[in-house]
Length: 151
Image 1 (tube, rainbow, N blue to C red):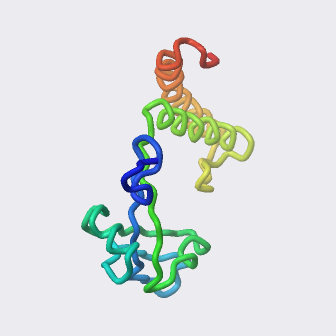
Image 2: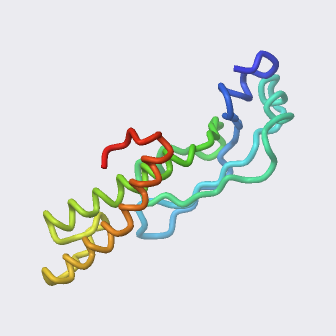
């Protein structure tokens, strides 16, 4: 933690922004919606300090997850932690997704998004495509970890 601004930085390479929810928009029939957060203004001592260090602009995102959307309340304040994702972690995440898709294709004949692939030949092609994408990811992770990642 930074001794100067402990509320702004957490550890090495992380930043905390304090934001307020200014927009919640849900299209009729959708379970999730659009959420917009903007930096807090100086209406308290803490917010005045955050205002000085929080980047300007807005953080807007769409959520298809109803529980995530319903978590937010208009006018309420939230802390957003921004942390760098090291390349090896990003690659691991991509590899885990590909491997989970391969399992889903083998067991159910569908992708993680529940898209039904079709014939056994099409399933085999989809699995082969994902295996081709996974191989270089495994190699890159292995190189980054000094050869300790399983083959």
